[in-house]
Amino acid sequence: MRSLHGAASCFYQLEQFEEALAITKDMLVLNEGDNQGARYIHVSALIALKKFAEAKRFLDKHKYDETAHMLYSRALVLFYVSKDKKVAEIAFAKAGACNLYIPALVLSPKLVPGGDLPDSYAIGSFEEAILYCVDSQDFWYENVELFKWFKCMCSMHMLATASGLEALKQEEIERERRERTRGKGGNSDNILDLNFFLNKND
Image 1 (cartoon, rainbow, N blue to C red):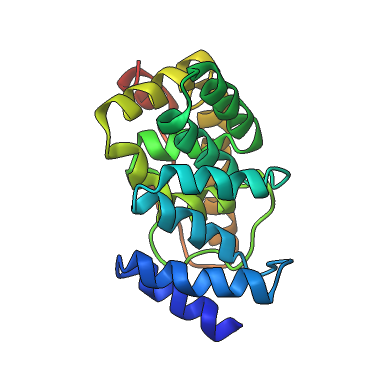
Image 2 (cartoon, helix red, strand yellow):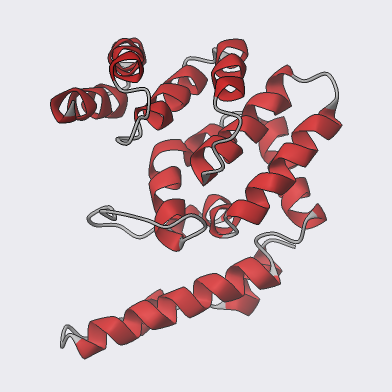
């Protein structure tokens, strides 16, 4: 199963989405509990292929999954398929409540750290946001109206403003402190300028 997951990830990164889907489909049959997260690759591949109706059906099957990847994917898919945009707005609000880091990272992708990806994450954590954004943040930029809606939703729900960015700033400060404690030094340029970001995205 690990080999299959690795193969699906490679196909996804190579933008061979149909191949990734074929593997994750088999994985989800063989391992219904999906402790490896094949469903995340699966739904992202469906979105990449613009198979939004199929993505909605898949998300509906996993409606109790409240990880950021599934919740933000649901909001995006509902933007495309729902005739009632209120449904998409509610989904976005729920996603924002789950992980407040993602809006800030999507609105300013340079904030996504480079280097190795996190080995694990907690629901609502900065690490979860990184893993989502590395795979899926580009989807929000592909449609001008979608990105406008994303920014509107952030403003409406006060995401990626004071609360989200202050949390990001504190996370960066804490990471800086840990690096210094380990004797690796720090880079003050990586600490977020909250006021600059807020002014930039007004």
